[in-house]
Length: 251
Image (cartoon, rainbow, N blue to C red; front, side, top):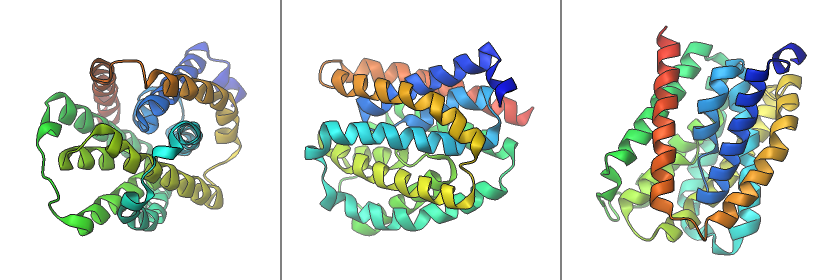
């Protein structure tokens, strides 16, 4: 690990990922894994990225929780939460047997699909209450698996809630508490499984102060910055990062 961190390029990618991920998490209530993975998979050993993402996401969510906790809608989040909690152990088990190339490819495909979905404007299509709580539970379960596998617990509920329609503040009031709980469970499960080893904890020690500070700035910016243009710039970044990861995995 000291040799790894002595590389200025690696250290720059590590801290840039922590900065961007923390700010996005504080600003939008999700996105730590999506943004950080785009940086960290390019510079770090692949097996260290998912547990590092989970830790960074959890601490970013805690900052968001302190800032906007009064707006959380735990009642509407519950249909997502219970199945999501059940999915986390499956994701952690999948992580223990996944190859580095599979990790890169999975995250890269997720980044590209997520960014393209939003950039093409499909979130404008509303499905209303279709599927009810069983559909919400299925989304929560898959998101729990993704959270345990790579810290990707927040994006799928966001896409689903946007498809259901309604104000963005109401959507955030559901997906952010879900993301907080699932990432907490994923961190606990990874600690038990041994994924949070000395390498990950060393990297986390460098990243977390940057992530926490950036998350705090993100919560402050949430009330003042135009959301549409900012999200579009982030989506373009995710699309480029995901494409690069897919190219690496295929190569």
